[in-house]
Image 1 (tube, rainbow, N blue to C red):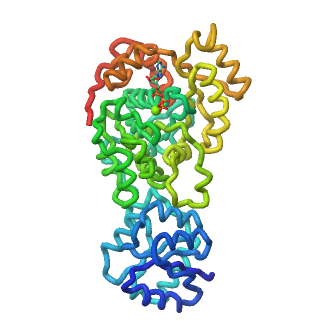
Image 2: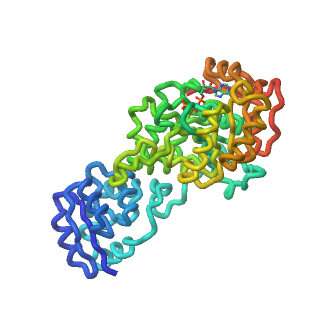
Image 3: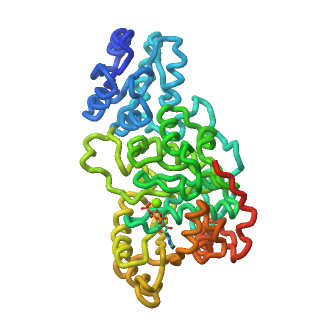
Length: 437
Ligand SMILES: Nc1ncnc2c1ncn2[C@@H]1O[C@H](COP(=O)(O)OP(=O)(O)OP(=O)(O)O)[C@@H](O)[C@H]1O
Ligand SMILES: [Mg+2]
């Protein structure tokens, strides 16, 4: 097979390397790129099958590698002989094949031709050195849970991702995500809650985690630099109570460009090894910034939520129990189906007769069945006393309103995954020792 190579190499030895590569049988240098932007543009334009890059390429990160892969361009690292730190850096970013100026010609041909068209980039293995096995969790062993009725965990060590999403209008995504995660942990399953809402991250405040807690932005940065592994993620995900870890969201909405898709995918994939359940609090926006689609390297406002929804094993769709909330929920069922594959588990929050009329559960059931074909709704009661107490205390419902109707309803919902018996009331919060980071 003939391979067209795009090179983006250190100036000092670029010329020599290009000369060697261009003379190889079946290999052509398609473009000598001057920088990363040039390389990404050449890849987008389909000018090559393989990028030959050096570690000091300015701006090179995991997202850039994803961009190359997304355009069918394989990546091989190159350096002067003996530059081990450069080679290591590229491996940490997920570039597994490497050549040197002094690599024998036949080996060069083998590496370049077999890498071009090889398997796509796997961000979850990018922190591994060749021959290493995936890391095992150093923290707690993942509990072997077999949740009925949803499909059981396919592998006991691979956590299940539950995305909590709902349309605009603050239907209660964060309240549900926080408390669902806390109930899963209280039932004995190590759980990580990740705040992916780049419009209004709220988990840190809801759980009184210090503002300085680095969270998702730091994890994303470490991922892009190739330094995120399981231990680093465990350090960033604060343990707020036994078995319950939290990766807080971006501290201010203006920092959304720091959270790119490839990094979020990597974080979620690693989190699966850290816990039996990975609960995602998401933002409302799921549009894909279509005007940016010509430029796949551009950051996207909804990237974090979209990546979370794409990775989800289960999707909890939260809507508000009022006429506007229900209408949005009807549209949301269709919209979210485009970006997430699991069938949504509908949850209607703040159920009350004053907003939809007498016998509200029946009315909501009828209208969602009729207009969206949605059935099997979980209802959560309107319970401002409980949510206000939790907000004021910066704590979970289990901790500060353990007998409240809302807490008991969410605990009941959590049994869908854990199979454990739901708490019935008083004293069920005993033993929830809080440790805030
Ligand atoms: N069942 C409930 N009963 C009473 N109040 C509730 C209930 N669920 C949520 N709330 C309140 O509604 C408000 C919005 O909830 P929450 O922050 O969870 O929504 P959200 O969907 O995450 O919103 P945002 O768009 O800000 O992310 C909060 O003040 C919360 O306390
Ligand atoms: Mg929220």
